[in-house]
Image 1 (cartoon, helix red, strand yellow):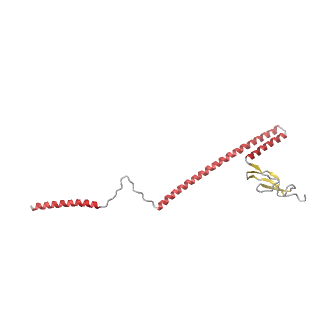
Image 2 (image 1 turned 30 degrees about the vertical axis):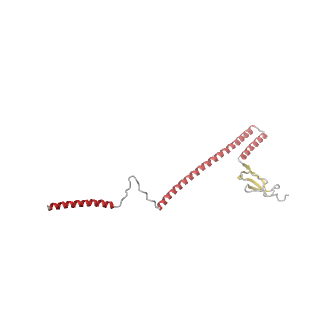
Image 3 (image 1 turned 90 degrees about the vertical axis):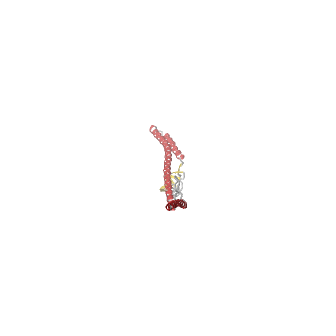
Length: 204
């Protein structure tokens, strides 16, 4: 009888010990700090960049911007050069076309010389061609430089000789050897002249 009572008490003690163990386990688990798990499909927050990384990124951005600007500038220069070349060609084409008209008239004048000995007619034809050519120069705002009787100006004149002259005082242009021309204020060709040094010695 005592043995059975001991067995029952031992079994009851074991059961109570088991119950305490389970309860203690739940209690201990509840006492642990809660951990937050990252939900599935969500990414972790990016780590902030350091100051050095920011500077490196800025340098790369500036280098890329500089390369693009240099490429744009190079393209602009090439495009401008092509446009200037085209403008120059068009201007040359117009001038050449006008000059060819003068050449055609000269050809006709030469042909007329071979067919006729009329000097007066030939002179009239040459005067007409000269007038046509001077009109062409005026159209392009090209005008001859006045020289004879004007004070010698190295900006406009090129002195090839110095001569005695009773008509023109010293340092005046006494004769024009080759006519000069200007376009606006720009000298295209200096006048080649002879400059007076005044009357010859011993003359009044």
